[in-house]
Length: 305
Image (cartoon, rainbow, N blue to C red; front, side, top):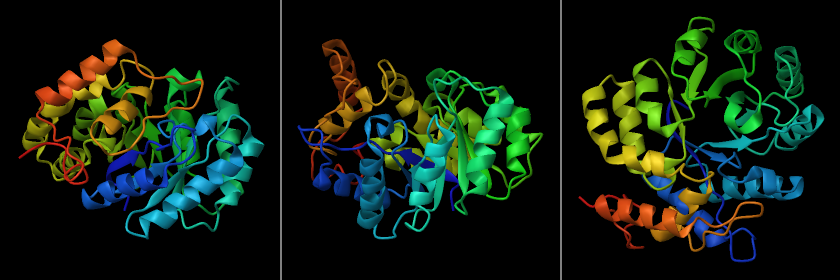
């Protein structure tokens, strides 16, 4: 169910920083139409760290409601406090989500044993499937392959989003874990190479505005047609990189607004609007790729045929 293109969904907001229901509904429908395999609600790209726990729960529940069971919802439930991560996970136990995405504890800089005990404790206190999330550039700690192996032995830890950007990690992990353990890329620019080396898909930022193309790349890759997948990926490679010239989700939100997928690109502090220079770079890239910015067509494919 989870293999392929999974979107790390942005959180559309109005100018006051409240959830924009119309935009959220539009972008969910965009992903349903373009065959995105699942939605991650309130991961890093969804600005989870700026939401209160009550807001967090309510947004996940709203995302489930708007999806109408047409696409699986994976909830971001990580925290730098183990107790908080457990409570957040338990609050969503019977919500209808398909799995949790749980980031390594940020700021604390725990040891490998601390990381193991953190995820083990979460696992023991829920029946929900757990996907680990390793992103050292954000968290200040790195979940190493041997620790991942130990965690993969726990019955409801089903996979990992590996966002270190180190492709060699894939082989290191695959050589240790059982064959059904899912390994997703968390880096759009290297995702195709990741899948060619045996990865199961990507949890993607770019997919917020290029869902059809990312879905095709993943589908082709999982069927071994890397030549065709690479042809499509060539259209996106500059975009993958541009969307990380400033901290995520600043660039992707502005691009989504530019394309008419969301009404506003409001960010919650401490995130701020993209620089004028970045706006020009994104606009130039969208124009260069002949991306369709009409609201009528934006829910289908952003690339003109």
